[in-house]
Image (cartoon, rainbow, N blue to C red; front, side, top):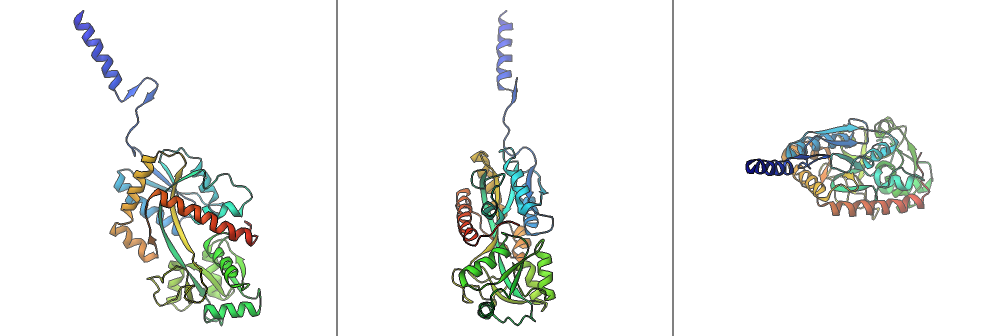
Length: 326
């Protein structure tokens, strides 16, 4: 009888200490399965390339595969909404870009709230834009552009790949800061917009530096200015918009990893640490720095502060100019 009681006690302890109990499974250390990064854009663009390059390295660091899923549409809204409504467990992330900050002001109603439905993980980095013109346009500098646009308001058009994206907001910021009335021409993406500038159908465009600079070097476009606070190392001879005579003109295409709200802080911190380590990796830098990416990194709190500041900054401009989503 004594031996039976001893066995029963040991069995009870074994059940209590087992990795499962009736009705549930004990939590496993994160991550214990593949992680998904939603890229809310078509394959092949900057957001997609950044997601895949970083995802591979982060997966190596965390010991689990990182799978990128493209969910384009609605200026990023389809992918953002899917991420916002995913389980807050760290296994679904989204590589966000500036649209997540501008959509809230461009649309009367969104199915998600960028401030209430996301937990920023890390501010990955940014790519400065570059103002380019067709060499046959006759526009020789930023000051020349301002003078010509003021002389004939609305006569000079600028191409962009979507309302609220960097190429579009650059033109709106230019109008706001200079009073020069350049008119937006919208395309279904930056690629066809740039094609028309090269062909001479539209005289100017603010484009990401990595896609336009090869055309500048080939003589198909002329660079007038870059949009960062400092000159880009990819184009050190090209002045910034500020140097070219437009104070306070600063805008970049930026990238931030977001997780659904209520993702456990320790999981967010683990993901944050992995991304910060990944962006310092020579292999990752070797692939993305030549593409114009300036890495930032930092804490989730810093990422959250930046996101909120962008929502406020562009919200004021969008509302002041009456800009609405197409």
